[in-house]
Length: 311
Image (cartoon, rainbow, N blue to C red):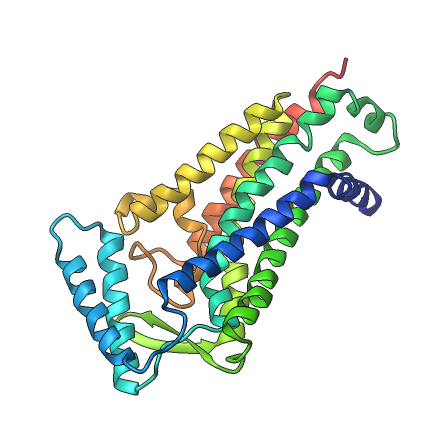
């Protein structure tokens, strides 16, 4: 199996567009840095207390709006508690390479997932379109081995690309904001109480706990790629579903019905530092729910792939 996975990875990385995708992720990180610098919120100023007080006034107004979404109210209340903690503890908020990387983990994995959909959406369908699937089937590998090796290669690409994005955010952020703060704590709000964990733990857990979105997006694209012969169809549909699902999960955060919406379970960080969007939802429930969706997608694509006639 390992030689087949290695072969699939060689196919991915020998293409120039793969390296273009990697460059796009790094450019995305750079744009986030520029955006943060333009907003001028990356460094603590002498009047930081007045700035936080002004922010709190704005957050109170946002939370009091009659047409405010639940997620907007929740975020405003979270920032109020956190800002007040900074004021009470006399901690001037600032940005460094590590805190910047933590703040960008979810955004990076989201961007990487959309890019990885391109690879997953063509990794099987393109073989049928070009006719190279015949060469694979003439080798000693079974269709199951081909199926698994392609899926694992697509997942590994997504994981590697997201790791590159996070590493890039640390390096690029370090050059702009400085590398100080490695031993600092990451502050979060859970149950209206401010907690803290080591910054490296927050970075690693943020990466691991956002992987479900990557898995859902890639598996969806892979399912369509394996079940149909249209590369364009698999990529476009997967992009639309992933993007729409991500937006709905954010906009409808806190609504009771979202406990049955898979994209509401692809960010598991609230279980570590935060509050689940819907009461009664546990980490186990979210993991099982995501796992069931992954299993269903494979139950659809695998039988079609192994039984398809190759002309």
